[in-house]
Image (tube, rainbow, N blue to C red; front, side, top):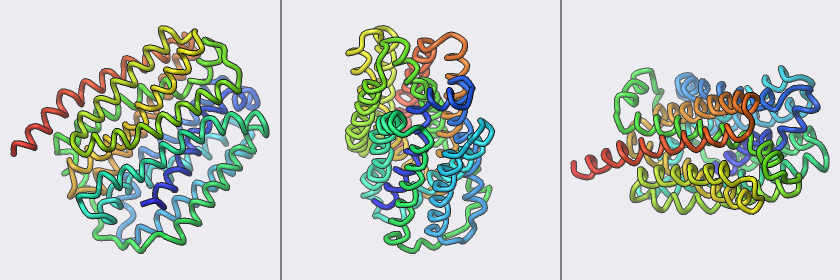
Length: 380
């Protein structure tokens, strides 16, 4: 479990580095913040396709070998990003990262179900997703600090080194994971026929699109509205990450009893934090606190919705996991795309207001339809 968590840590660190390096990357490449923000869109678009395609095409390959190959892609992508001389090369490199990310997330739930007894799945998922929380602690603030000290290119080379270390750990400790079958299109159709699975996907698309519309462009907001300097922005992003690190186990414990309540509750907290930022973010202390609360709330969302999905389709873990991964990535891509248009068109406030509205809508889906489905399942 911890080796998989380390892999997630490396992938998510690489994925989120552009958030803290957006401004210097745009300046050096000679494009707008919105254009560089599409590096996140490119990662997500490829990841959305990669999950299902990898599950369909992996056949009876040892899942351990697939994980190793995906981690190698992370290393190559980070090196290409570091040497990118244009937005086109940057998008190509980030697309490669997207394939690694989508494939890894697609298999995550299935691997957890195979490596631990059913009763331990919530804890196992929390451990794996903890890599996301640790990455949010490290990626944004460390990226901003290293970017200011060494430049953004050296920062991506550091991400490549981190990916190589993650690969080494998995080469040493990951056990053999022979395929137990080759999922086909029928398994995807079966997953999509389950109402609980669709409720989870809808919640993910709405909430995560709102989150990434806002969070992708949080640095320009903090620069322009409360007018924070680079050092203070790094501290604010560190607070976001620490909040996420704390939110993960809290949401995991709640989700062990009710994943619908956990996913819906943290979504409401994201909405509250982004609304606080939009209304009172001109005050540095308020902006700082709102960013920390946002991190705490979003840190709990992936584990809550992953546990929801595992319970919705435990017999279709690889196909439903691939579709959940695609839902996340479609949401990330659409959120970054919408956020890019909003920040270039009406400025940072519009991005944050959209984030608040979207995540509250998503919370409503899970707290109404999801809770009803839980009650029905409990009474069956």
